[in-house]
Length: 154
Image (cartoon, rainbow, N blue to C red):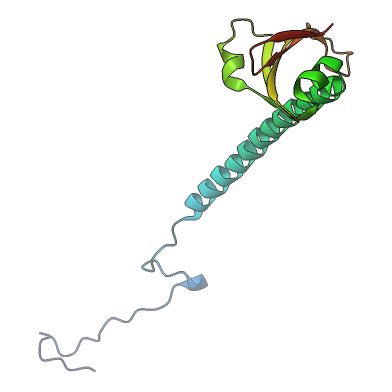
């Protein structure tokens, strides 16, 4: 018997809390965040897939443009007019702003750094041919710093 002065009946026993079978306490704080973890995993996995796909596409596009620049350099490195006007080719880079200003979407401008001078190679691509391994052109012109133009292909 437990005597408590605040208790009106001194003969009652205090209630005891017995553990629930299986170790489950209904008053214990429930764990949360299980669904949130799955959400973060799905978002992270989806973001990784998007990053890999976009990165692969961008990388493939950059590789294709660099390959085209290398082909142009190899195609015109020993051309007599190019050697005479520029002294040979050191580097070739696509000029995006000039190419985008052109109305014809098959015409591309390439800045050419030469040994003695710089210039611009203006090309018009031939219609797409899936069997062609190399770059196919309809025409190519060399424009020097003095704004002279020379046909270098065909």
